[in-house]
Length: 289
Image (tube, rainbow, N blue to C red; front, side, top):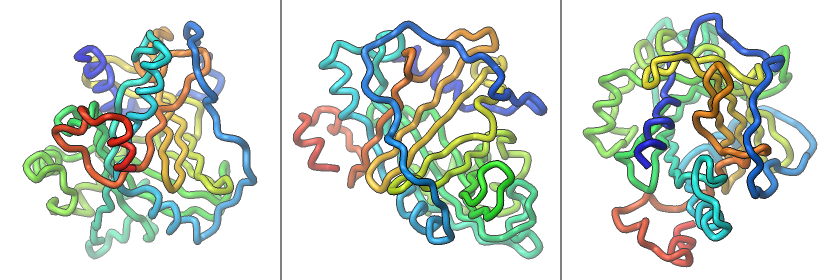
């Protein structure tokens, strides 16, 4: 697990200016593994102003893929090269960042427009919040006429200031305990350029895609550029994350290892993990959903 922690920590990345990788990049494949369907069925695409409120209500709370890991182990699949998935928990909290005079949200993606909504997402292993491998501040707004996605929801991503991260550690990762600042926490210096995700409603779900099939980012943990591809899907009761990474030579680093990658299928659960949650039997765990 330590190796997995180190490699997933590589997802805490710093973008390399000007190094976006387009869909023309040949992404590597991996040995075949026993997998289930990796894609949700197609539905009619539509995005309207009402979708922003719906999306924000979906993108909040606790999500966990323990059910998936139990199925993996029963099928003889272990994480990484074993064709299975790590146990991941995601906690999404709404964040109130009041705009200071003159900002109006202008620090987000340089738009100069208001209407941004914020959320903090913390991802960690094994129901253990000390095993954080990714923590991001997300800014979401409605876009009516994006040149690539049309009517959609744009999500920009920000790394955390050291003081913000420290405040979260000292306050049991409660976003409400942080003194958020529009001019500092949503600073262009913290934004991950090229990593925006654009969400469109597909019937009962939202599908999120980056502008390019993949992007090159600098990993401070590994000390090198890595190629990242991220596809995400959100329902009212589930969050699927299909996040993969390779080095620039095409060698696998993290994510589901299969010819047809299966997303990390996180189900919404009602409560935060506790110290003994990993010892729950499956039926007891399901009662939290």
